[in-house]
Length: 341
Image 1 (cartoon, rainbow, N blue to C red):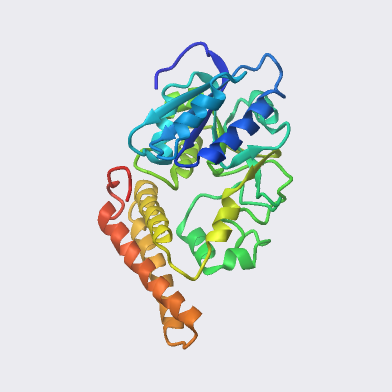
Image 2 (image 1 turned 180 degrees about the horizontal axis):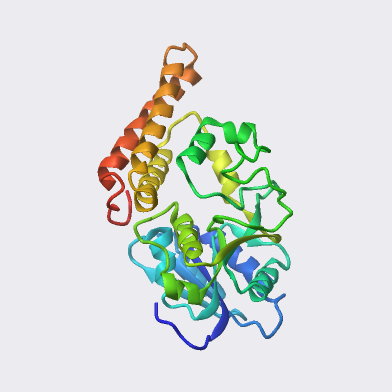
C-alpha cells in the first residue's frame, strides 16, 4: 500500500461478502441510512467485494446500489480470498483517511458511525478501535478482548472464564469483569466492526494473509500496539452483530461437516498465531487442546447416554482435527494455500 498525502474520502467502508446476497443487501441499506446521518462535509465511499460468491451477489449490488447517494464500488474476485485476503484486496484500492471494516452481519445503531469518526478525530494516538457489540436480541457480545495466551485459552476452554466472569483473573479473556459502559484501552477488538487509520496500515502493513480466517484482527491489533499506537473500545459506538446468534443456533451435540471445517480453520489460525508471536509455545497450544478433548472423550465414552456418547465421538474428532491442523501447517510454520478447505 503506497502512502498518499491527501485523501479523496474521509472514510472508506469495506465489506467482504461470500454467498450472503440478502444479508449484504440489508447491510448496505442500513449503512446508507447511517451515512445520511453524517455531517455533509464527511465524505464516504463504500467498497463491496464479492469474494467468489455463487448466489448472484454481484448482480444484486449492481442492480440495486449503482445509483446510491454514497458511491458503492463493487469488486469481484474469482477465488475466495478469505477475510484477511479479501479485505487486503479492497484496502489496496481504498482512498479514505479511515478504513472501516464491516461484516455483512453487522449494523450500526443510529449515530454510531458518526461517533466512531468523531472519536478517532479526537484521539490521534488511537490507531484502531471497536464498538460495543450486541446480538439481534440486544444481548452483550465480547467486544474488547485480551490477547490469546495459554492461560487465557485454558480459562475459556475449561469454562472457568464463563463460570467466574466477574473475576479479573478468570474473566480476563473477554474482559467480562469490566463495565461494558466504560471506554477502555484494550488488546484487540473483533473485526466485524473495526475502524483503523490508513496511514498506520501504510506503515505496518494490512492483514497477514497467512490467516485465511480467524485471528487476523488479533494479529493486526498486536502489530498496531507494537508500533506505539492504542487500540480502543468505545461503548457509545453500538453495533448489532448477528454472528453471535448464528453461533448459538449452530451449537449442537452433532458434529456436522461444516462444524468440522470451521473448527479446522480455527485450529490452523491458532497454530499460525502462536508460532508467529510465541514461538515454541505453539506446542503448548496444541497440547492444551488435545489434552482437554481427550479428557472429555474419556469422561463421556463410558456412558450409556446417547448424548454423552456423541460428545465422546465429537471430542475424538476434535483431537483428530488438531493433528490434521498441525500437519497441514507444519506446526504453525506455513499456511495452507487459499482457499482453505
